[in-house]
Length: 276
Ligand code: 7PJ
Image (cartoon, rainbow, N blue to C red; front, side, top):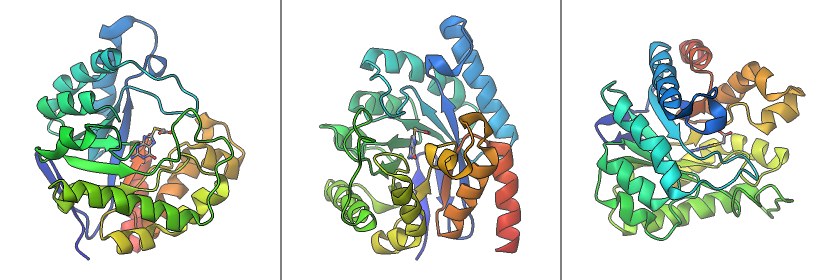
């Protein structure tokens, strides 16, 4: 199976190796106090640093989706995200926007975003229409319920089968709307309404997911509670565990890894691919 992802100005050939998506949070709790200007400068500096470290694409997020995190109003999310898109566009790296709001998608695409990463799988009314007539990449993720309730006793009869069925139905709806399959990657949504056991089963099923849907898989395990549960470490000590998670995902067939620790992940993947 050929693995290719069309991402706006860019195209990724994913046949031979995995690529690194670096996380750029532009939420107020992700930078030191100092107002909007400081947050923009911080975001640009962080992006430049990730580029030096060898990042392949940058995922810009204006709303935290931690379990129970507050919903950010549309206007506020736009105020956070749009200046960062404009500032980073000239750096010539693929820019992904992590949003589930159709209005943010529309504005981001107009501003030249290369990918829309939707934790909600483009389920919001108007989401598919917001991205349909562009050539941006689309990451379609599985989430059980919503961020407020997803971790309240998540239950599946067959977690792998149900996640694949969900992703298949979303892919079908998007392609029926005229969206080219080459623009789509899929993501089981680690930690989004999953127990540790669910997450582990889904890592092991990445190859099956890829084969059944015929699409590249993106995996986001970086610093998540699953890594904490397996290592017993707080979030600031999860780099090694996250690297192991990224490599396990790639070993099982993931082709995009979404990470905080870009330099470490780029090195780990170089060694991994040389030896795999
Ligand atoms: C993911 C994401 C993920 C995709 C977040 C965090 C929570 N987008 N956005 N996949 N996670 N595609 O980074 O801990 O796993 S936000």
